[in-house]
Length: 253
Image 1 (cartoon, rainbow, N blue to C red):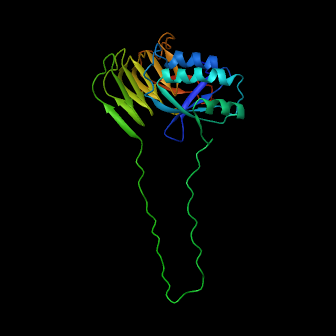
Image 2: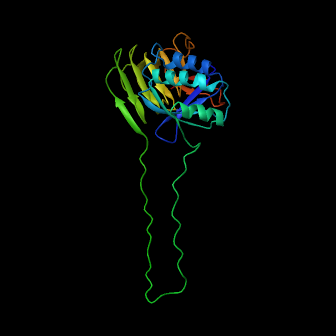
Image 3: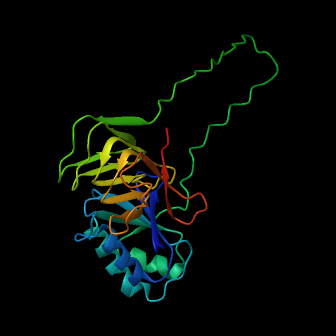
């Protein structure tokens, strides 16, 4: 489905709202439909700090429409604190609303230049031996749930994959910044790549979800799954052509 915005992880401990159209009214409508109080995912965010990315687009009447966008983000449990990639008029309006300007890319920390040493030996020459230290970098964390999830229960694997070994009933929600594996029927809501990871996937031995979402691209039970997918072992991923489309694939033994 077409989207007027994209929510993705930022380089800071933030999420970024990437605007894809200058029609802020349309963006506000889509935000309410997907994450507003009356939507199917009103608790998708947990007062996460957010930076608005204007992508160097010029917005007409931004000073009148921006406050409405900020109010909408607050209703979606997001806290807009900064903006980036804004034209001068847009930047002025954003700062008037209390936002701060963030750089397009956070600069990397500079490595100190090594001191130059003279080739001529002094009275006492001290040789410093620098030993390379190899530090093991741990892989992504994984949260494992081994009990059934009832209606109203929500599990969020922040910065991790989520593995569920029991049924996810209707009305329950499983959310992960990474992949979601459900080794049982999945009948509730499943949202992988919650912080914008477009490579995340969802796996289930019995796919019957109320809502399925990857990096903000979602599909509800109002749009039935194909017969060869519904109720069968399957995986869900995003298309590789950049069209923000969910791909459903059967998992054959």
